[in-house]
Image (cartoon, rainbow, N blue to C red; front, side, top):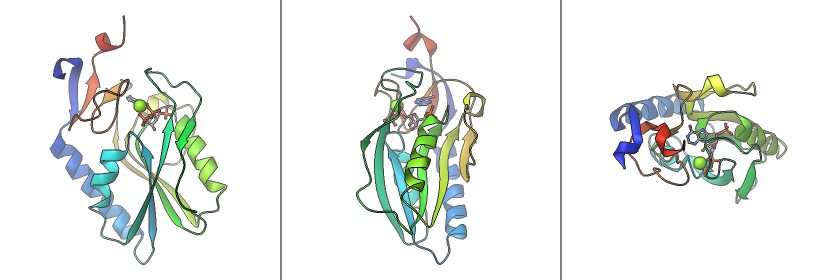
Length: 179
Ligand SMILES: O=P(O)(O)OC[C@H]1O[C@H](OP(=O)(O)OP(=O)(O)O)[C@H](O)[C@@H]1O
Ligand code: HPA
Ligand SMILES: [Mg+2]
């Protein structure tokens, strides 16, 4: 499996330290408030699990499953909700937990959708951001790393549903998806 990875970008240790940093900021910013973490499946599952256990606040969690990449390295442009939230977010302090922002289409869609449900506040937290590919302007409140314009996998993030279980984040070798 590892010869599909061109380069390791972030080791387990680097990820762990960054996740702790983000969790500390959230803990500080939301003192006295109840937070609802909304994880965007499937990609954000590992990040969400690691982040929430480092947040020293009373948090609730919920999940949405959203997909637009399927088995491709390019967004289909069509964001599909495969699973919606279980509960209402009205008057809740919501933080969306994403693994990666690439074109921004997924988050634009989710933000518009969630804002229409009247949360008390809505912020975005992403572990990875690929600013060069962004087609949509948006404010990201909590960010782990800016990454280069390469297709990355690992730590929950897939190519064609594979590589999600890698404990590190790496650049996928182009030979895997270019014929
Ligand atoms: O900014 P964008 O260009 O929209 O790309 C980012 C989104 O794409 C990936 O999800 P994907 O559609 O692959 O679903 P998955 O999380 O189930 O892998 C990733 O997990 C983000 O949610
Ligand atoms: O670089 C990426 N890797 C995996 N999934 C993705 N979805 C958007 N960008 C990426
Ligand atoms: Mg994917």
